[in-house]
Image (cartoon, rainbow, N blue to C red; front, side):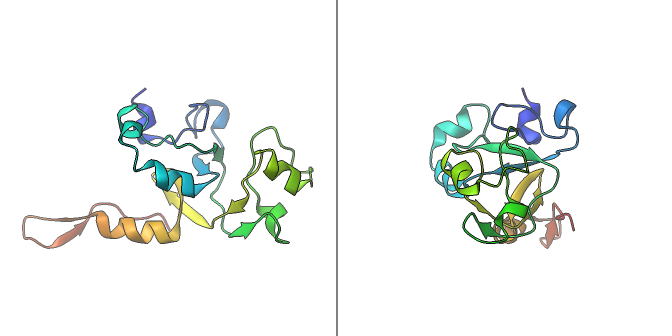
Amino acid sequence: DPRQLLHPTNSQGNLCGSEEYANQPYVYFFDWTKCIKSFNVPSNILKGRPFVFPTIQVCVEQCPTVTSYYKFENYHANRVCTYDVAQSNHNDEELVKAGKCASYIIASKPLFGRCVSQHIQNLTNSIIQAPDRNESDTTVWEPES
């Protein structure tokens, strides 16, 4: 599906922001370290779903604004979990060990519908500059504020 190149999808291949995920337009990746490592695997790009990483991806209503770890006090209120986990379930450590909730949360902002750390966005902002006809840099994309 060519829409998956442009629009974020969850681990099951569902488009975030459409149909049953209409109120969840962004995708959050449970483990960014696995995403970064997968960029070294050329076959991932050739599979037709270049933004599918070997980590759980869920559609979310908004990107997390807080960085936390499951052993920290502020984790529960900000955690990101699979769709079958009720917010009332307070067994955070068990849920993390079962792979139902991300063990850490990174404060992020949407970049092309994907929740991306501000640090990574700063790197991409320098990449998403292109020289115009006058050889001066032109911003091709402006981040959402």
